[in-house]
Length: 413
Image (cartoon, rainbow, N blue to C red):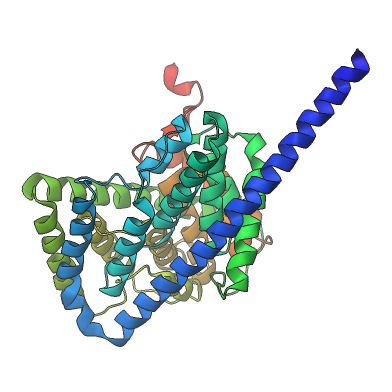
């Protein structure tokens, strides 16, 4: 009897392994192909905007088209990536047709110079792919949640080229403080498969300049902690401005088409007032420039403004890559004031502000390794710890749940 029970246990592990190897490979294969197509479309849109600056004046028209796409689908108020958070917690399917909507909306936003990223859209596309498989395969609720994590991992990895970060982020983001370790292998299998497929189709990872690290003495670590505190405060500012912009748009302009048109006009006007197109688009190129030590002192504030005006009006894409830009620019500016080399401080700022915005410290540490190598992991770990704690309960995703208090039991005393 004992031998039979042991065989049953071995079979359960083997069955789980085989099942999720197959499902993760299927998700990664599909997600990698879709991610490569999405990445190519967004890059093409960015290139066209760079080559034809007059497209900025069509941003209000692009906004109206995006609003019309969602209106025709019966969506008057898009919940964006919050739908993904709900799906991860409850197992609910993503709405049908969400993939072409977010795909088209993001491409139109980038084509006409809206200040938005693409990782938020990638997470929605990945969850949408997973929901399609859930319906087709009749997966149960718990398997459906795990499939959603695999879909998110696949698209994040395919678009950005950081497979380990993608897997950990998908496990960590919906319920902060709780990690479903059984999802680790499926998410890694899906993200690695998607990344290989994306590369085979011409995709490439985000390239970052080499970072030169200082000695890891106590004084340097304290300086890094001080910079991380500034990043935590900046993440609060960023999220507050983005949420306030969305609230004001909805309060004063009830029609989604007019709201998008007004938002497009405001972004175009702000761009002309700034006298540069540097703050349009996602901003990953300027984040890399900041890591090389080149960023204007007010660049992070300009990016906050344009991103809030863009996303709040209903344009698509997400806020993650703009957060990279904001953190890198802030680090490059504030680092020298704290006695840190600008490029190193920009790298720390990029990771720390990302952590403060999404409340995912483990994924943020993984991101630092995949973008900048493992040599400076102690600096980034300290920065993520400080930023995670001091950013409080502000979050990019209203449906994100911080399961355990950031203060432990201290806030109950």
